[in-house]
Every structure is written in structure tokens, then in C-alpha cells.
Length: 234
Ligand SMILES: [Cu+2]
Image (cartoon, rainbow, N blue to C red; front, side, top):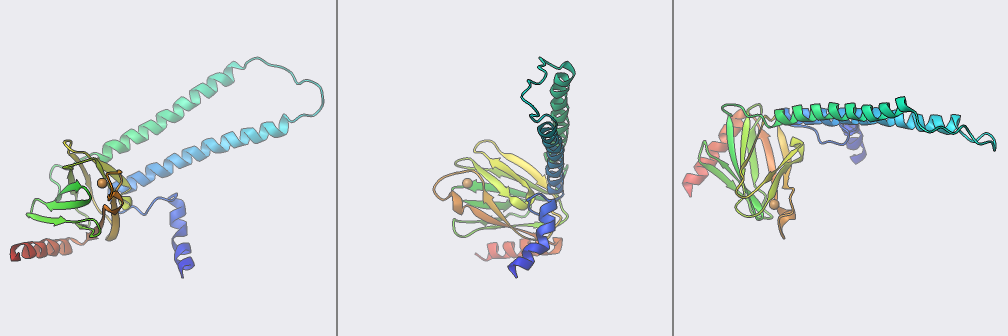
């Protein structure tokens, strides 16, 4: 059964080049950049392997006579200086373009979440509703966000540097004391996903885990209402 499950998603994972399945609009862009970079790397690789193979075969030792000795070849030297510059310029262009896209903010995000990363868990505040979810090590908090709506994260830390990482976002960002960081996503797939701290932050770092639940907007409203009811009942 495990084998069947593995083969069912093998093709996808193969074309994603081992990346997790993206669950946000932004993650799809990251995946495209990842795939494009690999295609460029493979193209360079095939040219290099081809040239190696060609010189191994066509310039193999045929006799004891010394082959013609040459000192330099200007066109080839200009070529192998210029081509890497072009490759780097292209990679730089796409990286800079996508970085700018990932750092974009909408004027008025649908959902705001204030993330507090602390030793050693997470607090998710929903300032639009006065609702908070707090975790402790071994009791992972769940971040609930609605599908198809823009979600702005505002991240702070009261102690040391942490890093907010949801593998399915194909994205992580440091949470630095005294230096709030923001980013925005729009979830595109429902489900429950893992999140963790990606910056060694002390003894219980490995237990600094959380869950991300992407739900329908109606379920999100219900979650907020339930949290409010639970909060006012206390
Ligand atoms: Cu941490």
C-alpha cells in the first residue's frame, strides 16, 4: 500500500524535483523558479558532459607522437568568459523578479495574522477579531487560514532569532527580535500542513512545531466565532 501511494505521487514529485506540493499562489512561483534553475543547470551539464565525452573520444591517445602543442585560443577564451556572465545575468533576472513578487503586499489584506515566535513555540494573533492561539512545546498550535484570501503575516520575537517555515509554502522567513518581518500569501489548497522553526533557537528548538490548516472561508469564520466564544466563556 505504501508502494502504491509512493508511485501515485512519484511523477508529480519527480517533475517538482523533490519540492513539496505548493499550496499558495506565491509557492507556485517559487516552484517555477526552482524548476527553471534546474533546467538551466541540466542544459549546462549536458553541454559540459558532451564536451568531456567528445574530447575523451576524439582526442584519445592514438600513438606515441606528441600531439600539436597550442598556447591559447582567443575565441574560446572569450566564449567561456562571456557565456557564464549571460547565464548568471539570466538567473539573476528571474531571481530578482520573483523575490520582488514574493515581497509584494496588497493594500488591504483579507486576513492579518500576528505571529509571535518564542522559546519554544508559537502564538498566532488575529488582530481583526481579537483572537489568539498559543502553543507550548509538545502541544503544537494550529494556524487556521482561509483558502483564496490574502493573508498577511506580521512576525515578531521577544527573545532570540527564530524562523517561520511551512515547507508547503516553499518559503521560510526569519523572525528577529526588534526587527518585525512581514510577508503575504494567498492559499490555494485546503488541507493540514506542517510548520516548524528553522533556526536553531535553544534546547527545545526541535519541538517548536505547528500546524497550518487551510479551510474554506466559511469554516474560517466558524473557527473565529468558536475561538471568540471559547475566549468569552473563560
Ligand atoms: Cu525557534
